[in-house]
Length: 509
Image 1 (cartoon, rainbow, N blue to C red):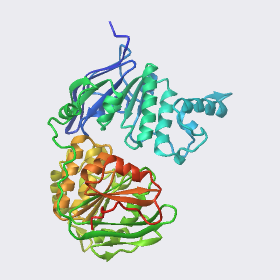
Image 2 (tube, rainbow, N blue to C red):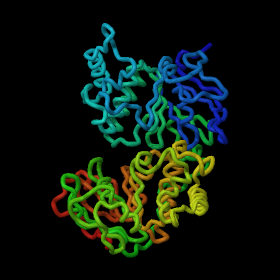
Image 3 (cartoon, rainbow, N blue to C red):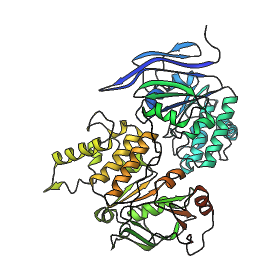
């Protein structure tokens, strides 16, 4: 007899792709009124599993049981009919349509054969109020920020009378305040009897929100444990080994200044930003969302213009708004949006790794393909990129492996100054430690690293100095010894004066 509280059960699911076993005899179940966390490294098989539940993939073998009945999910409409909705990391919204049109896309209420826009917008307003977001149903989706897009996706899921809500890394791009708001909504959905499959790489979120945890490793379910399980045990289950040190920074004496930024100003965005990054050190930039961190590093890299100030590499001043000059000087940028700005998704791993060095590998109009392939293979092995081969399209890699490819192309270019903007967003703890070790290798070899992160423990754990931005200005600078969560946040919420305030004695020049 079926359990009336069981919403969903997966039994011995197997899914293969050419040369890859993505899932191998995976078991999973979801009960009414619970948050069941799905945990695993990038590439463990989590995305494949949720794509089968949403109808994007079909299993090779195994059973999917919904509401006590075995089902076959052949597409998104089947999933919707069964009450299953999925919110992916990349939002499934149409930018040029309104919020209401997105919520009811393909299911618009009609009257006399015509779309009943008034009723549609009224229903959308009710859903938006339910998720606690203050946005007009008539607003264009392209006008909304990330947090509001997230809430629109949840409102869309609620419009489907969802019983099973799958959330893939929903907090990856949210501030702490937005995360707490999201958690309140999830808790309310749980109280209303929905079941939530919650995927996250932030281990601290598990005990705060979850009820149970299923861990997937290398395509297999390796354990189901309570959400109260200690983090070190979750890590051991997830990566198959203990990770002794979460932030393994190996500090060394800093050398000469490789990057010098003086008085950088872009009217209305950032003002009078000055700092330097020296050989062998990691300088972190902390601050609240909207403080201007990303805008500053994009200007340093030449991707965006600025009105005043200067950028110099190893003493040589660079022309403004000139990415080519920055590349030639030895600056590399791993952007915040790796898929939109850091990769050619439909190109191969080999092609992406060789992007920056393509010009140098070209002689007389011919590219040294053999040399490029050899270099790409070496760096992919060094970084531990999980792939079927160098010819695999980057689009099909997990998030952590995509990030390794973005970083790898700059390693091939022997970059002097590597700028990392949110380098571990959406990446599991094992891959994070691998990237931290890579940062250590870069600084040990005399390179300089400038790192932006919204993960404050990451900034504190991996930086030799921390610059704190507030309202487009440098509000202060702290040494590693001085930098604490309290001291950084005190500067992040301050109102900087015209001349940037620094903590006495904290300038490491």
